[in-house]
View (tube, rainbow, N blue to C red):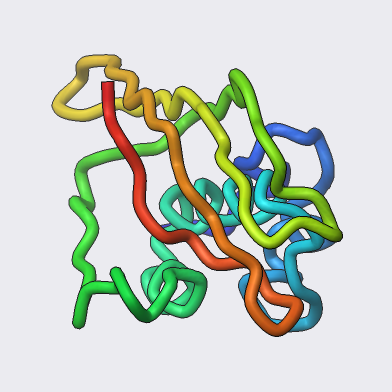
Length: 128
């Protein structure tokens, strides 16, 4: 997949100055929402290594393959609870918009996150 100029996470920053820095390990997500946004960006650019690394070991799959025909195009954060820099857990409700086979789709999920040793991890999520 090609590297986008604008970050797919939706904050309007250049990708290289936004989520790409988290993907490269130059910095860590400060909040659960920031991790959610960086994970959406990883789906958008096909960075499975980052997706696995940011997944909590208790629920992380052994491997991950992405559908090359599915394009993740927009993220909307609908709600959040906890997940701040001093919280141990948090949730983020979001809609992830995609295109697959020429059709638009949306995934709505309530994602759960935990912070361990100062790092946020995705645990799991409930889909609508």
